[in-house]
Image (tube, rainbow, N blue to C red; front, side):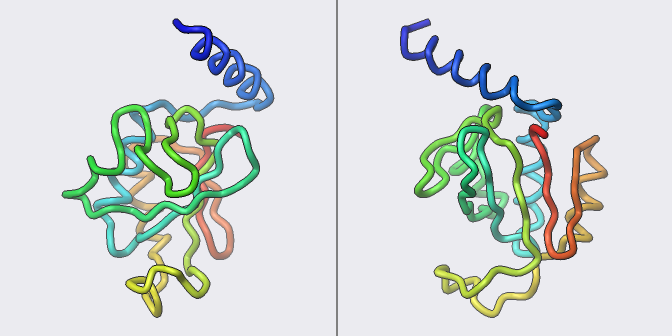
Length: 143
C-alpha cells in the first residue's frame, strides 16, 4: 500500500467510525443500481451523498445495456462534478419522485419517477435500509 492509499484508508476509517450502522456492501450497491437501471425510464436519476461531504451529486441512471459505462464492481466511474466514487463511500442515495426544472432536456415534463414500484423491486432483491419520505425514497449505506 502506498503512503497516499494508507492516508486515504485512515481517512475513510475515521469517517466511517462516526456512523452507528453500516448496511451495504459492494455487491448490494451493485444489485441496487442494476435494479434501478432495469427500471429506466421509470427511474431516471438519483442523488448520491458521500460520507465526506454533506453535498449531493446527481447521477443519471443509464439504460441497462449501458450499465457498465457508469458502474463497476467497486463503484461509480463518474458522478459528473463529483468524480469517481467507491460504493463504500456512499452514505445514502435518494430518488425523488419529481425533479425541478431540469438541465437535462430529455427529462423535462417527464412523468414522476415510480417510487412504489422501485421500493417493491428493491425489497425483492434483499434487505436494505430504506426511508420512504412523502416525495422521495432513500437507501442508506451508513446511518
